[in-house]
Image (cartoon, rainbow, N blue to C red):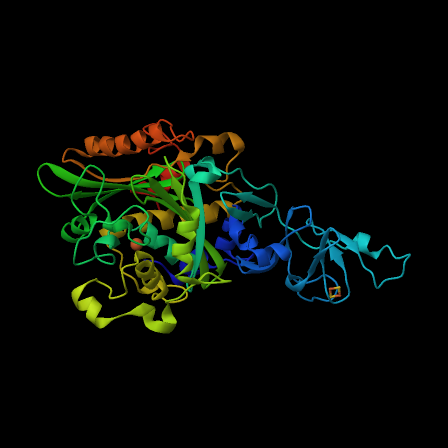
Length: 469
Ligand code: FES
Ligand SMILES: [Fe+2]
């Protein structure tokens, strides 16, 4: 049972909140590089960004360097998101003070010529890097950690596509849907089967699984009580869901929680999705998804176009949401889908998360055995928060040597032989290993080694141990 105090501890993201302090130990997605590439944005690459409850301005100076600064001008507080990008920085339109990407004040033009005032003025700035189509920011103290060698960071630009969407809810409930292997049998249930191609947006559960002609929709619908294994991994948690079809065939799906805020799931034989849930503030979050292709380059124009149709710019807000009942249609719920909210599984997930409220009241919930990954994750999260409070280093705050060893993670979805857990798991690892071997970009590693899918991080191992507090 989660107390109201624990719920606050896990969910609230301000600089003085326990979870806020933990999340500030990691790189956070701040914007898509795409947001700066349109002709209009190219003329003035300056954007207001709200991240972890802080108001910031992200910009690119004339030399192409990224800068992320507090948004209130240190002179008299006007909004730097309306600044002029010129003369080597961002200039406040109120009295013309100019700041470079490091927050250094370069000019205070209303002051006398002899004034040296600007030498004393420093706007708070934050480290920023561009990676996998996203601008990442570090809002914490001290040195940022290294990026783990996850597939989305190792693959070349041609093989990764990044997109985002805004949800009206706290980041934690948005993450928790992604580490819940049971929900797909209900929330994403379709009453009729259909085979669709690889790129069909929002329809990843409508393809056939690997090694099988059985439509995924049928497997999920008819075998709705998966056996779920939750195991510690170098990156967080490794989740295995088995759906036993008959004496000979079992559906196996391998997914992951990547600490602290991401999950990694298979999209198809070709692609894997790694998705971060990033707090805007306590009651809003962005999902940032990285679609990584193992063999062929991704068709970014097509993927972008499919998703932009369903989102409104500049905020990447979905066209359906609370304000229009997530598109709910009674006739459809009676005859076609479990939710009555269309064929796009992203909308189903959005409803599941947003309808829980701004911050889910976890004092009123009743977790069952199908929620075991959620339970393990919360335990790990609370421990990591304690670790930070005690001055320690939480999981996945990595040195560059450690980061190089955090690979993958392994994801797959397929129908293999019904056997014992280890044999079925070997089947799953084999599927992942095969596509890695085919990839032209160095995706291959020993997927069976500790750290890939097994135990290697004692902090994580303790967090999921059955007797862990
Ligand atoms: S408030 Fe920004 S220069 Fe005066
Ligand atoms: Fe889902």
